[in-house]
Image (cartoon, rainbow, N blue to C red; front, side, top):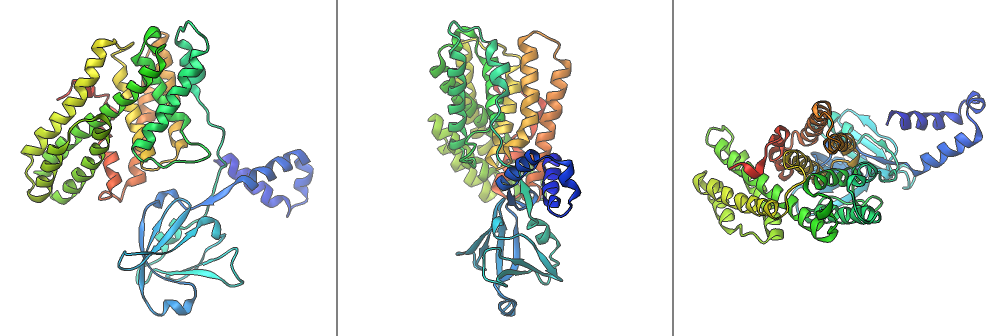
Length: 422
């Protein structure tokens, strides 16, 4: 990011300082110009999904009416919602603005393509406008780079296939299943990069630990079944988290936090369970009772039963086709669920890059029967860094439905083998 920011400043200053013409060739300038034309603006990711109370208007005169509205930020736009939450009054894109002016509690955002003097006025009185100003700070986004698949050249060639063309076919099949997983759990999509290369790398690494050469040649069956196993593993993780949250609620000073958390977890479980044709009706009933009176007995045992059902199917598959490396498979399955959770809540795919790169290095060390100490340590550090970034991304939104994706996966940093847990 620093490199691109530096180049951006260079091309801005180029037309102001003649000496730069001597320093950079015309080819360099053309390249930088093309780069900057592809760039877009966005609002600060730190405040993505945050709600602000504002007085909104298209002129200072309108602000005198003092009618409060709600402003909700997104990465590339914000919505103004009526005070009664019944309608979206208007939506503005980050590309509509190029500057922000502050007058005490008032923010003025001139419209680039509007009539002269046209602007959006946002007053946060009686609160200061510092946080809203930070949230609407315009940042430069880097153009979508070509998707990189590190596992394609490092991990897939380790399969000793009878047909050399199978590696590319397997890569394509894994990509398709990754896209389906993201769609199943309603992860945000990008038309220019429909699937994260880093996520494909992580799933490929886990797949490599699951299947040997002979089994992997049955590409369609193994990739489809493995995607279902990932869904089953997520279901198991969420059921374990429900039991943990229900138990924690009995000693918590904020039981409403766990009540909402469990309700949100059950919604995600419903998506997974419906995909897997696993009954979750009893869990829904017990979750309602838990929300009403805090009774944990029923929900704990029911969640354990649903989770065990999912784990049993995975273990049955292990009996039919032995994993290539049963010892290290849980580590990479945990990594896949962590990455999937990050993508579901809208973290940038680029945030996964370092995490996935260390998973590829670790998997390569396993395949080559090399020492695992250093690759495992680096993977653990990258995983913890990603989890910390996920927590930071959602911190302050602990009652938001998405916070379940921090709570449910936090313990996966410990390499727990959920398939052997109760």
